[in-house]
Image 1 (cartoon, one colour):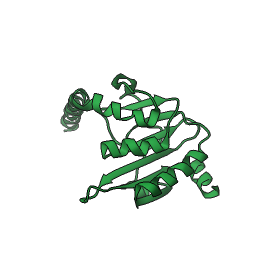
Image 2 (image 1 turned 180 degrees about the horizontal axis):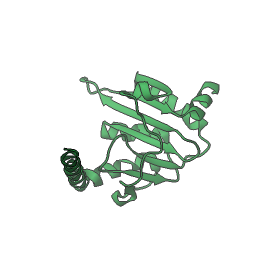
Image 3 (image 1 turned 90 degrees about the vertical axis):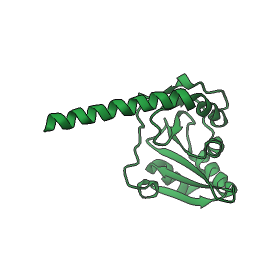
Image 4 (image 1 turned 45 degrees about the vertical axis):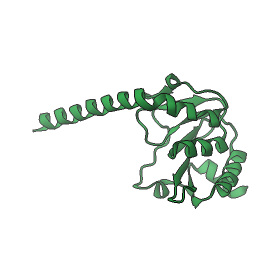
Length: 170
C-alpha cells in the first residue's frame, strides 16, 4: 500500500512540474517584464530561478495569521506611506523577489529593490508579490486586489522581527 501511495505522489509531482513548465512558457515573459517597476531594470525570465526556495515561509492558514505585522485593505496612498516607512527600515535593498506561492516563475535576485515599485508590480499583476531582503531574515509581501469598482486595494504583510521592531521605532 505504501508503494502505491509513493507512486501516486510521484505521479502528482511530475504533473505539477509539467504544469509549471507550461505556465512558465505561456506567461513567464509577460510576468517577468512587470518586475521592472521594482528593480529599475528589465528582468529577463531566465533570471528567475525555480530552484531557489523562499528563505522565509508563511506557514499559517492565512497571510494575516502568519505575519508579524500587517496593514489590511488600504488604498494606494496609505500603502505607499507604509512602504516608505519600511524602506527607511531597510539597511539593504538587495534580495529575492517573486510572486508569493508561484512555483512556475521562481525567485529573482536583485541588487536594488524599490518597495514602492513592488506595489506597482502587485497592481500590474493583480497578485501578491514578495521581497526577501538579504540583510535580515524577513519577508515583505504586497497584495493587490481589484474591487468590483475597478479600484485597487492593498494589504502589506511583514514577517521578521528585525523589520517589525524597526517599524515600531519609526
